[in-house]
Length: 246
Image 1 (cartoon, rainbow, N blue to C red):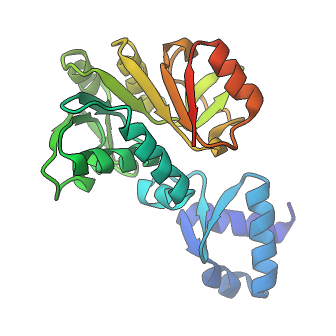
Image 2 (cartoon, rainbow, N blue to C red; image 1 turned 90 degrees about the vertical axis):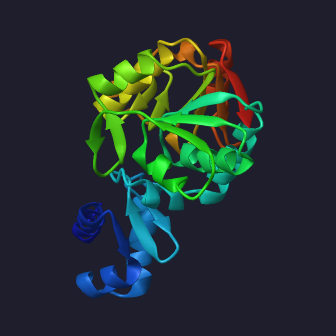
């Protein structure tokens, strides 16, 4: 990475999301050069490009994360909804793909949704879905509720299926999260020993973050896209995780 690319990455991470036109003006080089730099930074895993802009991978804002691989996430959400029976009660922990799932289920109108995500609750505000929002400490950027109160709520509420978001997967670490407090909530959900389902696009494979959410064997089903590494899919199947690809 050269000094110009380093400056671009700094600007993207600082702004969370920045237009290509802004980078051209700030850096003072041509659009072709900026786009080449952004392509390099994306291929190196430092950021994500979307139409006319770049998004920081350090960004926990769900609106921004929804823009990344939106079509794949929407397909995953629709597939996941097929795993939910009419009149079932499900817990949706968080994450961009799970937010789309919540919207699909809310449109169905026959599912009760429990969530520690204020973002998901707000997303469904104009639906007639039955929503139970758990209490806790509010994380402003992720719009999630975490902490001891959230864990107590999970311990005292009942559901048959849980959908969890993750930030990374590696065979050495299992499923991991970049946020320790959200990982703690995920662990509390897994401790209920219900049907636990992870929705994630293939970009999360091969990445390691600080906090493991729990044992891989506690995951019932993984839904991902066809670009997930075959060796990781085989490993998960050997851990008795049922895998669906779209």
